[in-house]
Amino acid sequence: SRGNLGGGLGVLYDALQGEPLSHDLLSDMAALLLAAGKLEHAAAYAERALRLRTQHGPSLYTLAFALSGQGRVDHAIGVLTELQGGAGRDSLQAEAPELVPVAMIELERLRRSRG
Image (cartoon, rainbow, N blue to C red; front, side, top):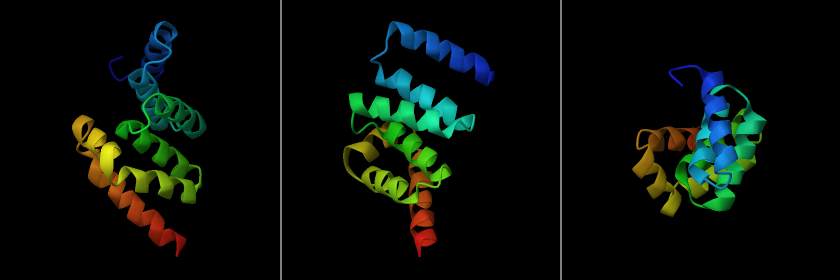
């Protein structure tokens, strides 16, 4: 929606009405909500996407950062640890390779913050 966050959310919401079981649309909605600082909603949409495709890297990434932003550090570490290897990492690498190192930096930061 050409940089218009509200418009982008509206477009995705409308698309989801036609395809409510699209993990890609749910993941995109989660990412936009995360960017908007709507962490609870971002986490909810990411979780919905993950129910449809359990190892979807972008959804795991969004969920982890939404949880981290909410102060749910242990849960965020768990999601990022899951994203560290296997199919989730492969998925993130395929769809958004620039986010893989960001996720791993956040995992280390959260681990250090726990002590």
